[in-house]
Image (tube, rainbow, N blue to C red; front, top):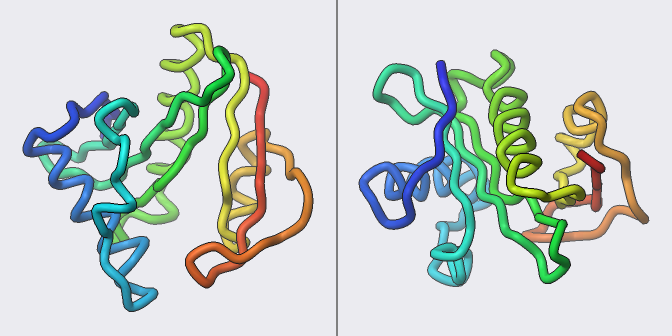
Length: 143
């Protein structure tokens, strides 16, 4: 398994959209919509590959603050969950962003993923709130 940056609108990006829809939206009875992808041409996309198969992905949105970014829309193929794919994606994204001068990362974690992010050094901000009908909490990390 390895992680790489994925170009916006290429074949691998389309595979990212399919994986995000399958993992993040289908269980909610929804589909990934064009509203979910607004502005993604200006965002970073990373994919975890098993040979030539996309098995995980994450999107990073640089924020208005020069040295901050938001990790969003992380998805891992169900058959690879719990096998280190998410950790590998986060580690790669953090290192890539650090090299580009980013210092702060934030994310909105599903309640069920809060412990995963805490193990990777992320801290919570505030209280739980509803997003897409699921409890989330804001988290951040200084890299």
